[in-house]
Structures are given as structure tokens and as C-alpha cells.
Image (cartoon, rainbow, N blue to C red; front, side, top):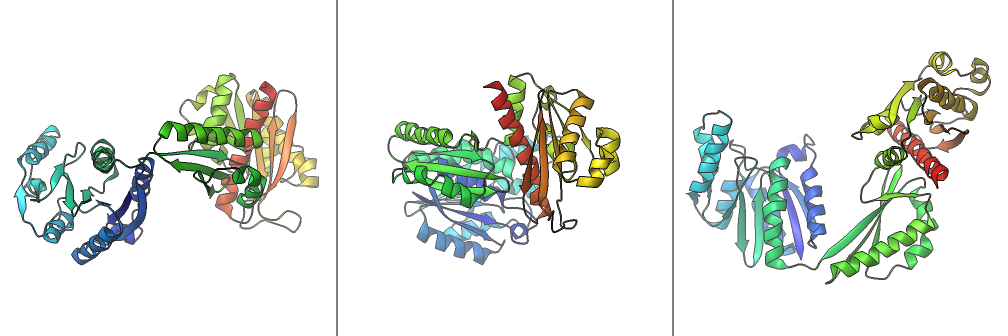
Length: 415
């Protein structure tokens, strides 16, 4: 079963709004066994909408459209679809009552413009909008389905999951699809590919592997389709377990879980605390940790020691070591970790010092050189990383590497 997504809106084409709708819809369709074969972004022009529909009906069985259903003059999708199908507009009383109640609940007077939200093409089946005023529209043509939905995500998403997808699954009964994502960190994509080559070659033909890299993280997605979803699930989970046993130091979780979530859970389960001392990451490591609800259970605080005077004055770093080895060194980062651990009285601490770039690098310490240390109750360990030349990626990779060092240390100490 093939689907196409058409996103309508000049704001998408000029980059004013990011097209998150299409990626979310594609993921939902894929999970339901409906394969997305094309995604199109077009302007708010009638000719463009007509042409895109003609082309989409040649490629796909299901066309899902978003955008252009608002009450203002620039929202032309509804009238354009009526003209495309050669039908007139009709007044839909249930939609009118719902729009009227929507405004009454908010103490707003309904205008003539809002009333027109209840005008729909006469050949469509209206789809109730429980979070706004614009109804969705379901059309059928030559055994194919065209669905138009609002572009506002908090209106479109529940409409899609609660109404559109169930209708599509009932009509087409696609083969079940199962997939699982293995979250890994600590190794570049090309090295990862070589590392797991034998495991990858052991996969049966009907199970597909996709590499989905991002800075500091590689997602390995296993997917398969077939008549027996439970059987597929058990089979894929077996290969996930095999990989976890093969590279346990690289696999940190499954299905989009974050390193900060996993590390936070480990600390909470063991009733442990952590503090951070950051130089080149400038607080980003603390931001990741505290982005998790309830992180106050295990995170106490940070010193952002961007200046050397803060390293010496607040963290107790030896000025002589700073002079001799430089701020980006094993000696300094280990003292930073020990200093913050003692200062805040935590079970663990993390420290990061590096050259994020784009300036500040030398031949001996080029941009992307980062030292990270983790201090525990017994000792302090540090590791040197070389991340590259892009400042933003260096900061993120540094923070993720620090979290992973902490994760591995917690596991080592408690197993």
C-alpha cells in the first residue's frame, strides 16, 4: 500500500516554517504498514495543487494533504479541491454547530468568515476536528483516497491518529510492519558498519537494516513486514539482543530513548547524584541532564568554568598545571571533576574542557580536541576525544560523550 504526502504552504517553501508534519505523518503511516513513496511541498496556488494531485494519483493509493484550510482568503485548499472534483460547496450543519460551540466556549463572537468553515465540497466526507474549527475532508476517486487536513500540528495529529488512520487500515488492511530502533553512541558510522559487519550479514533477507546517524548518535533501525506481527516482533527482538551482547558498550537503549534519559534512570535507580564542571560546552551538558523531568532527584548543579580564573578559584585547579599543560589537558579536566565533586558533595561528577572552535586550535591541539573526565567515589578517569571542526557539533558530541562515560561507569560499578 503506497501513500503520498502533499504539504501546502508558501511558509514551508521559504523556510519560515519547518515541515515537521510530513515527517511525523510518514512515521505514523510506516508503523501502520503503509509505505510513503513521495513527499511534496507546494505553494498556495490552485494550479500547483491540481498538478500535484494528478501526479500523486499516478503514484499512490492514498494521498494525504495538509494546509490551507483556515478561514482567511489565503487558505484556498477547500475551494480548490471542490473545483478539482468538479463539485459545488454545501453547508454542513454539524460542523457549523461545532464551530459555533468552539467560539462560545471561548467567549468570542462568531463572524461570517468563521461560519464559512462549515462550507465543504459536496462529494467529501467531513472529518471532525476536535481541536479547531476547520474540518478535515475525505474524498475517494477510482478506488483511491484523498484526505485533506489542517496544517496546524495540534489539530492534524489527533485527527490523523484517531480518525484517518483507523479508516485507512479498515479500508486497505495493509500487511503489519514492525520495526525497532537500536540507539548507539561512541563510534562513527563507518567504523560501526565494520564493527557489526558479521551481525549485519546474519540478518535474514526480509529484515532490513538502516543506519540513521546524527552528531554523537547512530540509530540502527531494523524493520520487517509480514502477516504475523508477533512473529516479526520476536524475530527482530532476537537480533537486537544479539547486537546488544556483541557491542554492549555502544548500545545504550532502544526506540529513540536519549542518553540523558538512560543515564538519569541509572542514577535514580541507584539513588546516586552527579554534578558537572563545564568549559567548552558552556552549560549544554547541564541542559541535557536537566531537560529530563525529575532530574532534581540526582542532579545537584554545575560550575561553568569558561575562564581559567574560575577553574582555579572555584574548582581548585592548580595554576601551575594550567600553565604547564594548558586548560585542555588530562591534568586540568581531572582536577575540574574532582573539584566539583567535592564542592557539591555528589557521588559522581563530570568535567569537560576542549576547543569547540572555530578558532583557538593549534597544531598540537586542533579544533575539536576535548578532554572529558568522570570522577567516582574511588577515582577519576579521563579520555581524549577529537570531534572535528564544527562548533555546534563539537559541543553536542562532547556532552553526549560525557553522559556515556558516566553511564558506563555506573554500570561497571554496580554490576
